[in-house]
Image (cartoon, rainbow, N blue to C red; front, side, top):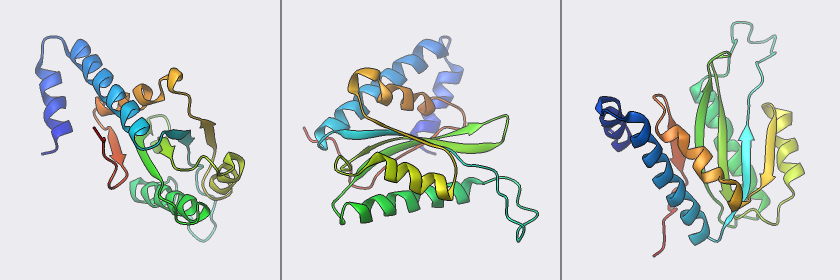
Length: 168
């Protein structure tokens, strides 16, 4: 069982799940904000969505699924890594399910990409997958805290880039 699952069970069984969930989100948000700062700073706040497929060769494929969306995000990271000439990038991303569509989308903090043009990254994603919103990271807007609301959601999925550590 994952730590997140254990915490979620505790929150559900507690008398005050909202206050406990809020405390958890605040702790994670602070940790993610500090984690980015320790790694050199988050550069982008990205929201990446998926359009429904329109492929006559695959008439039964109606919605982008979990595996497809995961591969798409990994391809995006590979594209960014290539664009930085293999300089290390670091990231954290949360998957959110759009219940009215049954399709995931991602919210992500990305570092190590300060010298890349956001419009090129946006265009790359849009051409292949769907709408992208890629903004410069502004610590004062609380993106780390927004992303951490998915830590306490029932079907939340949050992942960090390998090797991303908080240096103390």
